[in-house]
Length: 224
Image 1: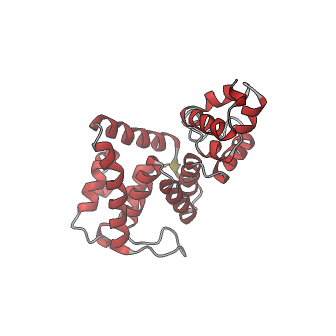
Image 2: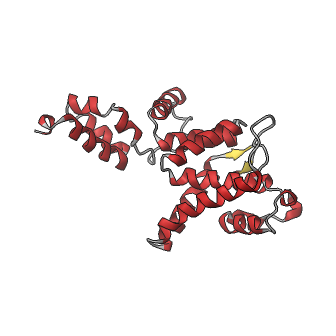
Image 3: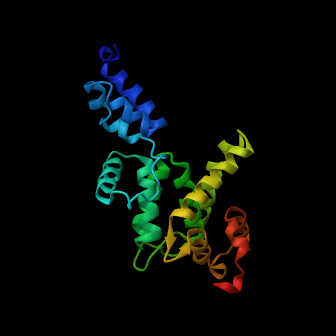
C-alpha cells in the first residue's frame, strides 16, 4: 500500500498533489492517518496551491481563513506571502511591510508577486514607499524593477505569447476586482504613485506602464 512507502517519498507525492489543488489535498487527508499527518508537513504546506480560494475570502469565515493563511505564511508558502503583501500595501497602508512580503514571495518563485513588486518599485522611482520608510535607491531601484519584469517575461516568451498574456490578465483581473485602495483601483494607484518629474527616464517608464496597465488608457493626465 501507499502507506508502506518511505516517508520522504510520501512527502514528495503529497507536495506534488498540494501544488496542483487544495481540493485534492482535502481528499488525500482522508485516505489514511499517515497521509493526513504528512499533509501537515512544512514542505507540503509551502507548496500548497491557493488558486481555488478567493483573493479576499474574509467574508466567509474571517478567523478561520486568517489562521489558515498565517500558517501558510509561517511555512513559506509564496502564494500566501503574495496575498499578505497585497493586503498590507493596498488595503492597510503598510507599504513597507507589504513590499517586504511581495519581495519574499517573488524570491520564492511567485510570478504574480514578481509582476506586482516590479511594477510598484518602478512607479516609486526611488521615493520612500511610506513616510519614514526606508529610502529607495533612485534610478537603480527603477532598473531593478525592469530587471525583475524582464526575468519574468523572458521564460514565458520562450513558450507562447498566449501564456504571457494569460499571466498578465490573471494578475490584473485578480487585483483589480478584489482590491481597492480607498476606492481607487489598484492599477490607478500605481499610476498615481508614478511622478513624471522625478523620473529621469525620458518617459520610458510611463510608456512601459501604459502597456502593462491597460486601465491607464481610460484616464487622462488631468483627471487625477
